[in-house]
Image: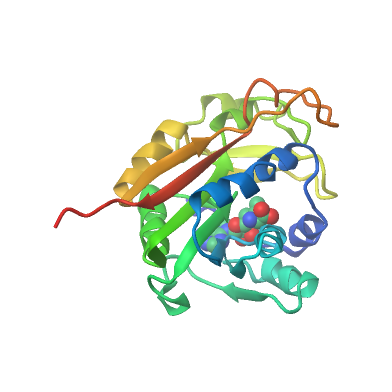
Length: 244
Ligand SMILES: C[S@@+](CC[C@H](N)C(=O)[O-])C[C@H]1O[C@@H](n2cnc3c(N)ncnc32)[C@H](O)[C@@H]1O
């Protein structure tokens, strides 16, 4: 069965375009400036799965010259409207060479792989993205911890989807976003941390660091599970050194 991208739809893209960094989303972005400073040299970036541009504007604010790319024209239209001088491009899977092979210091992917199905498809996309990296370039891949789909969160609810509990890597799971107008369930692809490790290895990527941001008592949010379980996992990846 073909997996349909939940984001290729005008009501959803409009709803998403109003989203900033509320609640659980705050934890996805909170530590990124420090992580990026620590791991990235240079300032040329691709934002893979830029959506309505929130993550691209975030990178631009950190000083990166950024190209946002996505497979949904609906999402890109909002990104361009919110950032008229920004560069946003429609792409198809694995076809990125026109952007500049070996040129980019950072490829950022935030929540994008949550929507990408199939091992072969993911490996192909990751390999093609890594071809865009400069020799010292890194890929920062931030996705849902698989445990997000079986608990309640400040920004998400999954209690109506008990079937998520038996999901395996590659299965479709459902989650409701509480911070946006569009409350219809988002369909994501479930992927375990263990299988992310396997995937990166298959794509010729080495894990340089992993971050699992937890909420803290002092933050002004009504955390539910966020202090005990990290809702997101951030992987910093580099190309595997080839032995000549
Ligand atoms: C949840 S949104 C995240 C947007 C943005 N990164 C952010 O943090 O606000 C996920 C985005 O990934 C895009 N996407 C899904 N599959 C993709 C693919 N194969 N290639 C590029 N973009 C994809 C969707 O169209 C959607 O805009």
